[in-house]
Image 1 (cartoon, one colour):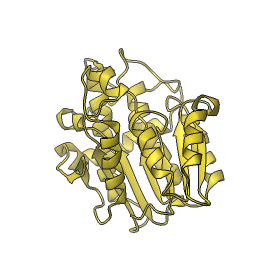
Image 2 (cartoon, one colour; image 1 turned 60 degrees about the vertical axis):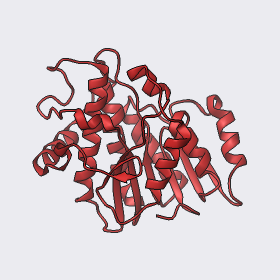
Image 3 (cartoon, helix red, strand yellow; image 1 turned 120 degrees about the vertical axis):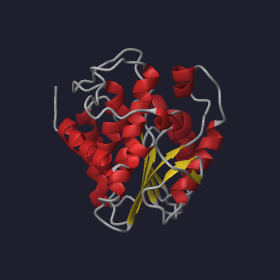
Image 4 (cartoon, one colour; image 1 turned 180 degrees about the horizontal axis):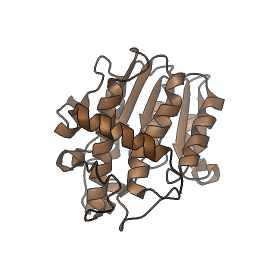
Length: 270
């Protein structure tokens, strides 16, 4: 996929991997729509940096949304529609570490699942009609490889809860959804992939595991490389290399059940 001159939507763009990716994309894209939970005033320095680095005629659009509220995702999608009539690439990067204790969102849904899985699914679904062609990249994690997808308890209400377990579970759901979507896209000209960007020294990693890792620049380079590829619909990447995902993600029955559960959850309000 050619990112030069494209319209790109990047979520979770104000910190960590997302911020570094946004800085790298600004001089390449015609329109870069970036999302974060902060107010525009709180990220004024970043926005000035992005706007100062655009190509001639390039545009930066910032949209605020709290992924802990599904209505906010609807408003985010409306904001994107107001900014553009076409999306060439959607990079679902926004995520949070597992909450210290099982916590419900404003919608009454387990918060880690909502932020890391339901919110990007809701946004993707809302934007598909703006993508006659293009590419969707879902930023996952290698932690999904050791997770179990609890289709009988997607919100982990009846299983022992731990922050790392909730995080890995949400990322396995995202990879499984990616495999399902790859077979159900509205146009053969759209491709969707998922990826593990690397073990990266971000606040999220430290919050989850209290360890270090590679630089955010390394992860952003991996993300941009995967975003630029083509001909790989449904692939899971370990950094830049195609790799087998958790077998559950490729199970058609698991994909179908997850899709139905997801549809039900997205239709629910607390």
